[in-house]
Length: 359
Image 1: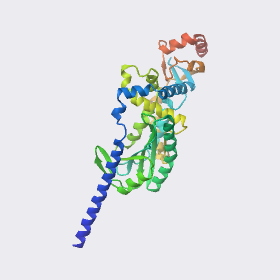
Image 2: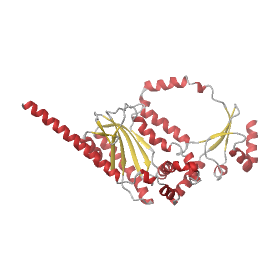
Image 3: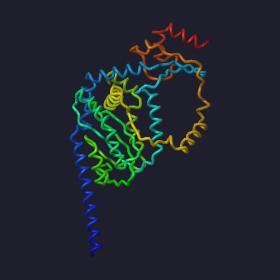
Image 4: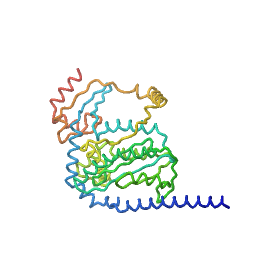
């Protein structure tokens, strides 16, 4: 009889803890409901007022200057191909490619599973003013290391934290983290929530703002981070739409994503902050993974089929800063509009350089 009583008491305790965890999740979801719904932000009148604001115009102009100011080259290959390329600068495709290699290297070296991984979003209250927006990036950047240290003391092991801008410019952080404990989840309103009241309380109490905690799918952990990093992997296309004021019919569907993408790169550059931070554990420490990559590279057929670079011409800064210069790395052909423009505007200088390349 006493044994059965203890079992019943344990069952009631477990049900009580699960009920409290569900209550905390419901409160967390209720907090999120107080924010402006995404559908309201996507309303045409709201978005149109936003993209016509002085903040957006200043941001677009600054990012345009940033991409132009990097070093640009015209490259001539032995197969007759002519391309335009540039150095890596935050926001362009070259920088995004190098960053994605580091992120992929890290994600591939961690055992992400549903029973040990969480996806956490950290936000903070801020005023919708220029000073308030900048303050949110500064405060979150200062508070994030303290929160990560507290979580590591509580059992978090590997992590990667990615910063992203809200539509109105404020900062929030997405954290994918692996824990040295078994994590149980349940489904609530289409999202995976954790049952452990102690873990949920520890995570939320260590952060001074709003904290959303979710479980992950077994095979989709890496996709959680890749999704947010890809939003500002390269801003060239977003910048091109922004410079024409999103006036084309097909631009309407890109306004919300473009504003968040441009704002993220702009604020990271202005605040001199990193786009992401991660723990030291990486795939680079795995000798088997390094050997596998080397074998793949040696057996890659593209290594032997690459055209040989004959010569490279550095485009003068005066050309790069011209309003008609397209700051997108691409292949150039004789009838390419940009090649025609370069010849019409800087014909003598270009012909002189191309003649030198032929020699």
